[in-house]
Image (cartoon, rainbow, N blue to C red; front, side, top):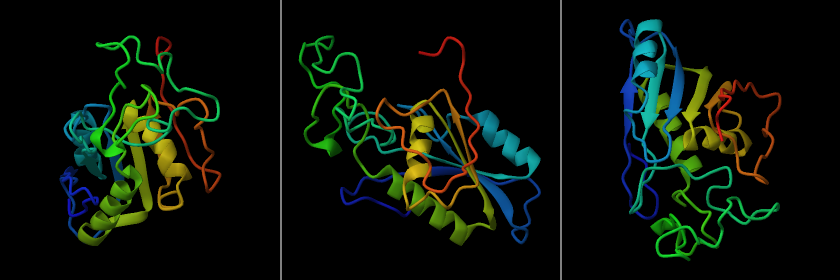
Length: 204
């Protein structure tokens, strides 16, 4: 991927084109965002389904800093929020050693409590740049661009729907087992926005 943040961190994405793509007919596009510590190969079934059923799938990898690939959004790096801490152990008493600031990524500098757990890089800028790159390089139907994600990637979708840089660029969102942290559930910037959420009875 050509985009890099000020830190210079590289990132990449996997692109799957339908088997009958001719490069002339605009096709739907799905951006797929992995879960925390995942990568661009996390959802092979979606990639295969797109190839067989006529839509493009692009699966980027989030910035890892010095830890694991992740997406910044939905309160993952802004605790405490307006409703207080976003986790049950904001002091880090359960970490070893106690008092450790959890998964405080290098791009965050200093984390305000132990509830921060993803990169602080601008993941929305990354997603917007990827979309620009794909629209310039691949024959995409810009009116049929969708986003899906799992866990941390699902939480990030709500950020895409509420940020002015991306809110008007997606036709719909499909989060899987992921919701924003308490106090960070901002409404879509351009309602009505199509959402199809998937959760299980045993999700926590």
